[in-house]
Length: 474
Image 1 (cartoon, helix red, strand yellow):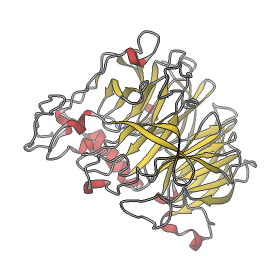
Image 2 (tube, rainbow, N blue to C red):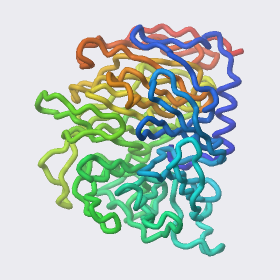
Image 3 (tube, rainbow, N blue to C red):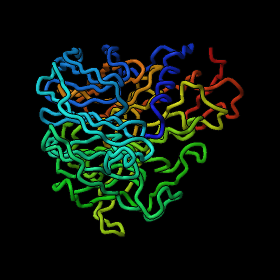
C-alpha cells in the first residue's frame, strides 16, 4: 500500500473488518486449497521473510519468529515487541533484519535488528528517518524522508528506502551500529502522464526486488524500472516498462480502474519463465528466477466501490528500446478477480473497503497472491500471455500477502498473511509434477456480503453468469 492512509484509518478499517459478521462468514475455497492451521498470535500481520529454517513475520505489534522446519506446523520461537507501521516488505540479510516505521504516516524510524539468535531478536541500532509533512529540517533530521519500505542490497550492507516522491533513499549499513543516509535518487520522469504530481520529476516509488543477477527492480507510480545495482550508491538504469504505458492519474472514483497503471506498480518478481519458449523454470520462493517474464502487482485500493481493483500483470523483457535507451518491458497480460466482471453495481459493503491486488510469491509458474478482502488467489502464469486462476481461499480477513514455504520441497504449503486474523497456513494441491498448466481454471463465487443493500442495476455477469442477491447487512 502506498503511504496515503494514516495508521488510525488502517486500524479503523481492520476493526471494521473484524467486527463484520455477515451470513457468509465461513471461508470458501476451491477444492484444491485447504486450511492446515492458523497462527492467531500474528494478528496484524504485514509481511514476512525467510532464512534457513525460520520465517520472520512483521506485525503491527512487532516481529514474530517461527521455526518452519515442519512447514505445515510453524512454531513460534522468538518475538520482539515493537509497535510500528508499516514496512510492508520486511527484509533481511545475514544476521540483520530491517524494520522501517514509515515517516510519511507519522514519525520515521529505521530499526536495525540483530537476528543472530532467531529466538531472541534484539534492536542493534536505530536511525531517525523523518517526519510526516516534510518537517525534517524543522527538527534537524537530515535529508531523508522516505522509508515506507526498506530493502537490503549486498547482504544488508546497503539499504534502499522507498515510498515517497523522493524516490530511493540510500543508506550505508556496513557499520550496523551506525546507519547513515548517503543520498537519494529519483526514477526517471515519465514520457507523459495523465496527471502530474511533481511536474518534470519522477513519481513516488514503492518496492525494490533484487533478482539473482543483481538487478534491482523498482516499482512505483510510473511503472517498473530495473537498475544494475553493483554500485548501490550510483546504480545504472538498464530496464524500464514501456514508456507509453503511463499512469492515468485515475485512481479513486475518477476512473473505472481499467488502465494498466491507475495508482501504482506495487511490487514485482522476475520469474524463471520465458514468454516465447517452454522451459523448466527454476524453483524459487521470494528470490525469483532469471527468465524474461516479470510479474507485477498493480495496486489500486482507493476506490470506495471497488470498481477497478488493481491487477496482476505479466511483462516481458525485450530487446526493444525506450527513448532513453533502456531495454523495454512489454506487458503481456493483465488479470483481475470476478468482482470486476459484474456490471453497474450500486456499491459494496464496508467489508470491501480494500479489495486490491497486493503482495505475491511465485514458484514454477504458480503465483500465490493476497487480495485484501478477496483472500488468497492462486494463478497460473506459466503461459504469461494467458493468466488463469487455478485456486482460491477467501475468508472475512484482509490478506496483505501470500508466500510459499521455502522448507516445503513441493511448494504446496502457503502462508497467507491476514491483517485481522494472523497467518493462515494453507495447502494447495498442485497436481502431477507441480506444473500449474495442468490445473483447470476455476471461478470464485461473488458473495452477498460484498454488496450494500439496495438495487443492483446489472444483476448478472455477462461473462460468468453470476446472479447476485443483495441482502441487508446485519
